[in-house]
Amino acid sequence: MSKLTTCWRYVLVLSIVFTFSGCQSTDTKLTRLSGWSSNPVEEKLVAGVLADFHREKPAVNFKYEPIPGNYTEKIQLMLGTHTAPDVFYLRGETAPSYMRFNVLEPLNQYAADTTFRIDDFYPALLKSFQKGDTLYGVPKDFNPYVLFYNKAMFGEAGLTHPPQNWKELEAFSRRMTKDTNGDGKPDQYGLVLEPTIEMIMAFVYQNGGDFQKEDGTLGILDKNFLDALEYYVRLYRTGAATIPSDLSAKWNGECFGTKKCAMVISSGWLIPELRTNYNDVDWGVAELPVGRQKATIVFTNAYAMPKESIHKKDGWQIIDYLTSQDGLKSVVKQGLALPPRRSVAQNLGLYNDPVKRVFLQSAEFARTFQTTLPERWYEEASVALQMIYFDNKTPREAMEALNRQIESGILQ
Image (cartoon, rainbow, N blue to C red; front, side):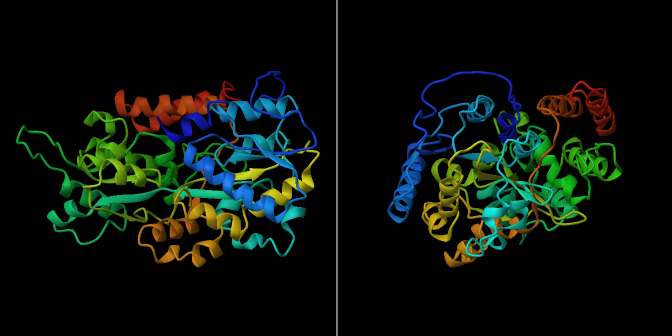
């Protein structure tokens, strides 16, 4: 399942009253911090960082309350029922919905403290949580799309470097697409792409296009958008690339790990998969091949405060510490995230790491894919892509259908 599918599954429903247990404290004297519950290792790590904070700021009485399952739905319902924690995780993909409903505390006045050094954060990450000049979330981590490539396959094909641009991406992929068992059809591909809107958007941004423009109008019928989409689809239709389902795989990372392809576009979540389950793959990473300009998609999260919080001063002290150099270093050293501050990456020597350096450099030209549309647009976009890949519609025909759906008011 696409990473963004669950992020856009729920809208911000502030008028629904819903009660659930185990996710909030009734003690209003405590400053409450909530995030999604991921795994025991990460929870132990967060607990350790908070213990460090408590030793430094013993006067702040707080409680960490991880939310198990359906995080997005539950935090939205908590905001709607006035039971939200004082600090909570905010996803970059869905941040516009929260900002649009005016439920978040503006953070400019807090971040203006010169010791906080807001200019130390990668601008692309900050922009994900800004509406105009107002900041509503402080980035806590990030992961951009990069190109993973199989060094052995490149060597066998006589290729000495990963593709630098769209032309090379197509040419290299064709060169490494092979029928190795002689049955008349390829069983090794140079490139496996996923037919998802977020992956396509990396190419759209590189071509100067956008899904939704700054004035709120759609850009999916603009030439820059359609040209990028047509390039992406042509790779598949002409046999230069394929999609996971054609290789009986669940996602492109599986294709890469089982050596059914030489290249995939993915992010940091593929690395532990490769090291744990596919440690015989000799792999490297590179920035995405460039179109008209450099661009990639970044997935980022932030700490935010609800406007209704009665512990804003203490809440900010928590955010301040967790996103400080000390707070970030302890998290990053575990390899679970990339730091949103340039200074932390530099002090930890991450720019000297051949893998992490590529991710950090990509943050300089990355964009979070966001829209202000209600959540049903994502389902309709998925249907439009299925029309292209499985019903043989042209990219223009599919985007015209999606444009009609959105502008007809169904999704407004």
